[in-house]
Image (cartoon, rainbow, N blue to C red; front, side, top):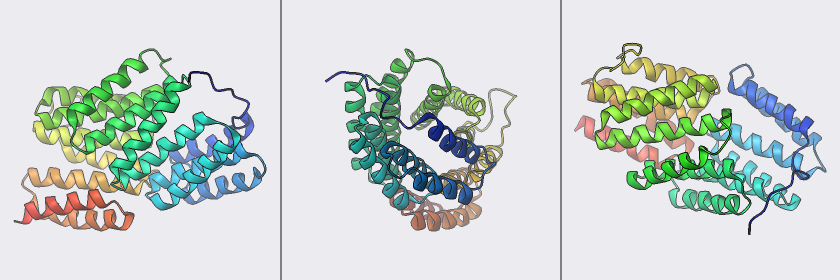
Length: 316
């Protein structure tokens, strides 16, 4: 089945603009988390009787709670958004909710479910000729494969995303997706020992993250840069500092702007690994203890297990 989705079951422009103003101010650090949630909750109540506007408010509440690390709450919001969009007949947004839910399950370590959700979304978006959202679904699948260490599969998936993106208008949305691709590719090359390629991808991720101004992307791009410089032991380009901790601090500062607790914990984990590699094992072990507690509290089982394994190796 191939076709184009009509826009008559989309959120109203005025309602969507108000919702996105909340998200944009929260993402750039000018609107506190609690106020953002309260405002979107008010908009949700205001939209009663309009399925798609209600779905949009639920979707964005799920988005905020995801990055806050409240995954169970995010899952509930996304489920409700999906139901509302399905009732309204907006299959594109149903597929996007599968993407968002896949991200929740990826963070919770349920990778099988995450991949299935991403692939379900890809099928729908391909059927309905939605290349931009299809690219996002493919990128998300690649990120799961990187987490699983299936690097060759992930590389092929990212390359497919790049090919599709080349036919898209080069807007901020596409640049954000490509920033995530470069981060994923940097991790792949880092594990393969190709430090030059890892460096090239990490610098591209940093440049795109800074250009977009997105706090989440800045946090993740600075994190991978810290990891790459740890392995390089220096920098090929003097416009960058050779101190990995500079980038880990920049990552934490960006993520603290939006209270992204889960991503902050992942940055602290990466910094602990870096500290251990630089001979600061006691400091690394203490940091890992703190990180494990956060991962456990957030229900991030896979991350907590990985942190525990690294700590055992450090103190052995």
